[in-house]
Image (cartoon, rainbow over all chains, first blue to last red; front, side, top):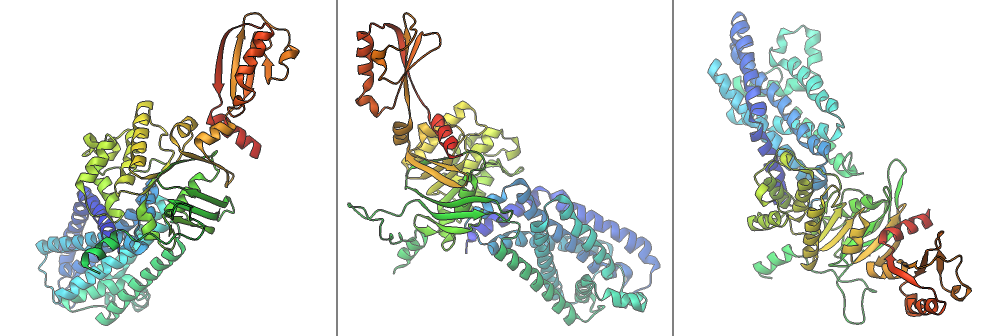
Amino acid sequence: MNFYGVRAIYGFEMARTWRTLFQSVVAPVVTTSLYFVVFGAAIGSQIDEIDGVSYGAFIVPGLIMLMVLTQSTTNAAFGIYFPKFTGTIYEVLSAPVSFYEVVMGYVGAAATKAVMLGLIILATASLFVPLQIAHPLWMLAFLILTATTFSLIGFIIGIWADNFEKLQFVPLLVITPLAFLGGTFYSIDMLPPVWQTVTLFNPVLYLVSGFRWSFYGIGDVSVAVSVLMILLFLALALAVVAWIFRTGYRLRS
Amino acid sequence: MTRDTIAVFRRRPPEPTPAAGSVTTERVVAAPAVSVQSLSKTYESGFQALRRVSLEIRRGEIFALLGPNGAGKTTLIGIICGLVMPSEGSVAVNGYDILRDWRITRSLIGLVPQELATDTFETVSATVSFSRGLFGKPPNEAHIEQVLRDLSLWDKRNDKIQTLSGGMKRRLLIAKALAHEPDVLFLDEPTAGVDVELRRDMWALIRALRDRGVTIILTTHYIEEAEDMADRVGVIQRGQIVLVEETAELMRQLGRKALKLHLKTPLDEIPTALAHHQLELSADGMELTYTFTPEASDRSGVAHLLQDLSAAGIAFRDLHTEQSSLEDIFVDLVREQS
């Protein structure tokens, strides 16, 4: 195990976070605050409570998930894509670090950043709406697992992408719509039965549902199903990473 | 085994037992710095970049790899450094296999790539420290400072990489490659885009590294540099090594010399008394060119020619000699091969 190597990559990526503090932290916080103002205060005041939770508070876990999903994917994708783009990847490929150590460095940093972001948004939200967290440890566990899984997915996207368009494609056109339709802003009970069934095929539903359960003890699906699904996504992402490692896909010719 | 010896063992794995056949009459020599055996590489496109290349680089030498564009130089370096997967054959660095013992071989190697691939927003010292960590070495501020000073980058240590000139970026890449104290240093076109003065400094540094025991393998388009710098030269052409020779020996064997005599009065033709010398007469009859190889000079010799000239009553105003450069030799070799 090349400890210094993992630390170097992790440190390099975290330094990038601090350097781009505005774009990586401030911008998502501002965006989320806007959601609270619009959906929570303005529109939310016209909407009834959902399972005894005010609408403004109801959307908090969904909004955090929305940001964590898009930010962890985008960040991890960019983190590995950029060295490929500039050519500096040669150094990582010629270094005595295994692919798993490379993943630990890049994905660890992207996940750290996403978790920090989630917690900052949570703190921001508490300024707008009264919050309760029924299961804080589960809340953290969901946050960390989701951040890790989607950072892995982002890493895979960054390896796969060979231009900036592809790099943007999945976060913007797959993850964001899935997050919006996965119960971020509503409970699936509010949907017609057909759409409820369709929504069950949206993986993000399980993440949002589980995360919301850790706050209010309520969810669209049972928490056990949520946990199983997120572990399944993690396993799938790890399998793809293992395949990339075995074949050297897009890294070593 | 005590704790200390375990630590030492981990830091420096023991020399592998040399294979039979690498035993000299004097003593068992250490494994070569790099040993390439029947190495082939065919890319997915079907392009065969290397064809059964075998090559040994000795420890502590400066080895220049020459060849036209697309000959396979960068592929060969890429395989040894872990950037490209070999199709067939094997490579050992200090006796360790690059695939089986990849962690050891990669920590032994430093690579300066041809492309100026650098980060943009990081500072000079941060990126050099990053390289050291990446290669598994604990932080060592003193070493980083030394490397930056050696490459005249110390004053720039807190500057962002994007503010550096091309020549500074080239030196930065060398600094990064030296950050983890490698035993074997690969330099792919190190002086491309570097001005004359800096180039001279760079060569001085490379010589100093060699004196410290670092093995240096470089590719260059400046053949005079290879001639000046390299202990040995290898020529690669269409994925095959066509020649490996001591630079001095190569110059001696293939380096032709020409003696040019500027005559006092023009000649119509070469006198029969001089016909047995390799002479050529210029169109205006004013210049005689005598071509010889340094080896032959002992026997047939310039001396005989001069005696014969004097006997024939041919007087000259001036004379000078020219020696063919490694570049001429290289061009001849490549032409022969194609």
